[in-house]
Amino acid sequence: MALESAKAIWDFLKEEYQGDERIKGMKVMNLIREFEMQRMKESETVKEYSDRLLSIVNKVRMLGKNLPDSRVVEKILVTLTEKFEPTIASLENTKDLSQITLAEVLNALQAQEQRRLMREEGTVEGALQAKLQSNAGSRYKKGKGKKNHAGNNQVAANNGGGNNNSSSNKGDKFPSCQHCVRKNHPHF
Image: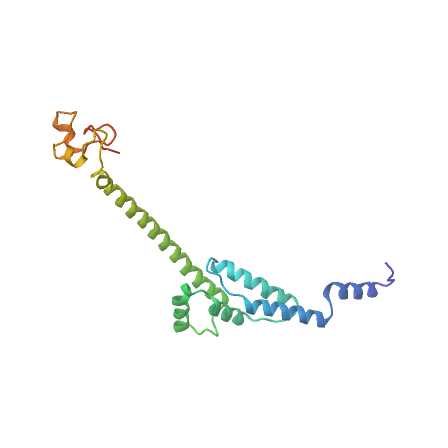
């Protein structure tokens, strides 16, 4: 309010909000240090990691310092987790890394990540299916040696040596039920 000319007000605001060159230089140094310290976490996706890096790069660029895309590509390739080693090796063998664009690298890495996730989902489903089949197949085995309520061994009941309340052959395809000792239904 004390300043009288538009030039004086502009200079004050410029200094207040932009800072002088020394302060901008310190901000750039801190951002570059933060950029250099970044590493990809195991739980992080390529998109999340690249977004975090590009956020820092954009802040540096807003302060007037140029941080080239080739430096960002190098940073990403060096700091990725081990699961991306095959893709990195493939890129090194097929492309000139000094000429590859940031978009190409990110697309290749995200494609590999999507393929890996699809394979892992299929593996989990297959593992659950195998476990389910294993459990279904072992139900008869688990109850085979247990005693039923009548005190007879189920193995003996299956062999015809135990008490059997049913005299027909239709119930012979099931072992004795552990709850009611009848053979006309599965024990579970």
